[in-house]
Amino acid sequence: MDKLDHLGWVVQNFYELGGTKLGIRSTSQTFGAALDEVLSEYRVPPEEGRAYYSVIVADGAGKNGRRSRKFHMLYRGTQAVVRTLHFDTLLKALYAELEHHLFREREDAIFADAALVSLNGTTAVVPVQFLTYFSTPSGASKRTGITLAAEPFVAVEPGSGLVVPIRPRLRLSEGAWHTLAAVVPADGGGDRFSLERPTAVDLVCTIGPAEEPVSLVPRGYVLSRLAMQVFNLPLLGQTVLEGIGQMVEGARCYEIRNGTVKEMVQSLATALRTA
Amino acid sequence: MATWKPKVREDLAVTILQDEAVVYDTETSDVHHLNLAATIVFRLCDGTLSVREMAAEIADAYGVSAKEVERQVRALLREFTDVRLLDGRVALSGGKRA
Image 1: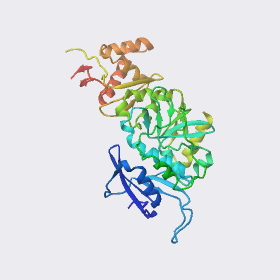
Image 2: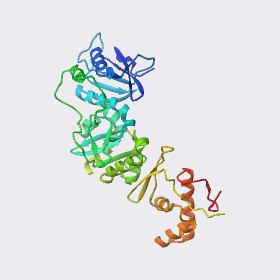
Image 3: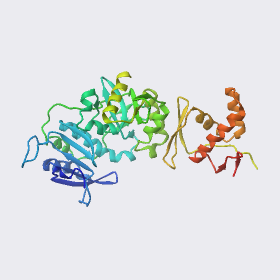
Image 4: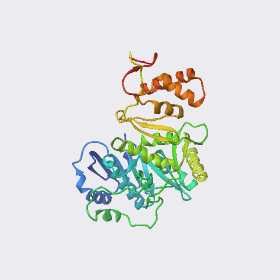
């Protein structure tokens, strides 16, 4: 049984994006209806099977004896992508998640299943596992001060190796996104940063069986590991090696030793502080 | 029988970072990271040198025994063959084409 099934889903709709049929369910009827309007061009008839995305919209107050939901949450399958107090953060992550179904066919950037993090102005590309580590209630990010980018993917400009904002390609109903954003009043805050311009990363990290909690590793090794996570590698081939190569060439490359979430987050913080 | 002159597949995507090669195999979708020694041998696999000639060239450049280098070159070529980075099917025991 799906471990999220007890959370009170009230709406579920299906869409086809980049050749993938996926269901999106939510605990909010209003959110579900607004999202259905946003994605009307991609709507397909309902199907059997579980949802690919699950969106919990914080309601702020308990109903029918249920505990209140304080956090907005987005799950991909059973993997928590975002757990946030800020609805805008959830929407940015959801938007990037929807866009990522088109990444395999795109040539305007190198799209990697990785995460961008920052600490005191130092940025790092890290394995996607860290998304989950920072989306659990462990408070790991709060303790270390590390913040995540709102978009749970990384786009790299082929010619420069810079990390760039993900350009939108989805065809959304005009103005519908504003309707969606209005489901929960804006609070003016945010717990994740948005990449506004092309940026050189300072660190690129992998996870592995290193002897030390944090070890400098060859750039070629990191490139090979990250290239395997690139959605459009089959399409771009050599361009990916050169683009990611440029990125890692200007960065320090570390391997974080496999361990507990707490250990790995602490190791990442150490790497970010020493960069 | 003609002497085997190893040649890297032309359809591979390759980049070199800090003297180490990263190779993307478009057929298998595998990405390989080659260390310094493997990269030296990989770059010599252009179809013009026999295994012995490769070993002699490396031995000359690094001032080491050609016999020992040849053993290492053969071991690396065996690995390249196992992951299909080279053109054609080869047997490496005698350094000749199967």
